[in-house]
Length: 323
Image (tube, rainbow, N blue to C red; front, top):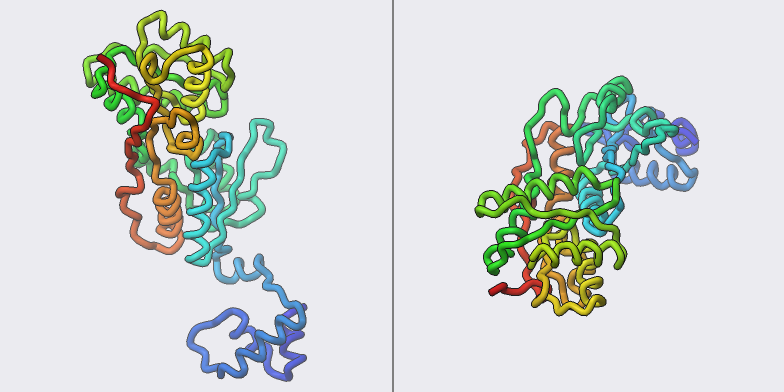
């Protein structure tokens, strides 16, 4: 079904139908005619040819978000949902794509004609070149215009400072053994050690654990033997594994061991004892990502990196003072 079919059915010009369907500005078309065209288009089952419209306008109104091969956890889902909503409000569709190491599928930037391709992490080697070869000119972050570390990952700093303020001087860092998040674990471990050094503490003992009693319990045994009194965990899942294993080992938490997580997921508040954590403004961060995309495709000012990029301490029952 085409615009010409609609014009023929109504007995009006093809140009008038095109002006209505494309919502062309500056046309003096009556509201009655506009309504007739839209109603007939609906009756006949007309669908816009997105590829043709993109070719004519130079825009597909698609934002492609390239995701790292991370577990799709609560905070990442919230972030994507909010970015999608903010872009929808501006008339854009957000589509996510996760390249896998096997690389057998055709990259979506070659088939979707997105207005911009975004990534939550720096593009992998060769990706930027592949994206530009497909005709996409807007990339975020732009490898040719680096702006430094946009997201400072201050959560681990708050974790260590909080435990220090509670009197703990022997603090460990618990990472995740999931290889998909190894880079993020390394970043948070580094930031935790930065905070420890600023407080005059030695490098933090560290272990990457699996979400099992055996793995978490083994790490706790080693840390307890070394005099560790508190643990800063990579995320709430790791913190919950440590707290659960510690309780089943007969420890009294937080008296025997304080544990603080990261991300403030629902798990942290439902666990017993409720887990101290770091809150991330996923709603604000999602809208910030959307603002970056819109600034690239519509020449809007860059969004300000304000409160949405900050984190906050959420103290709960899994941490306590150490005498």
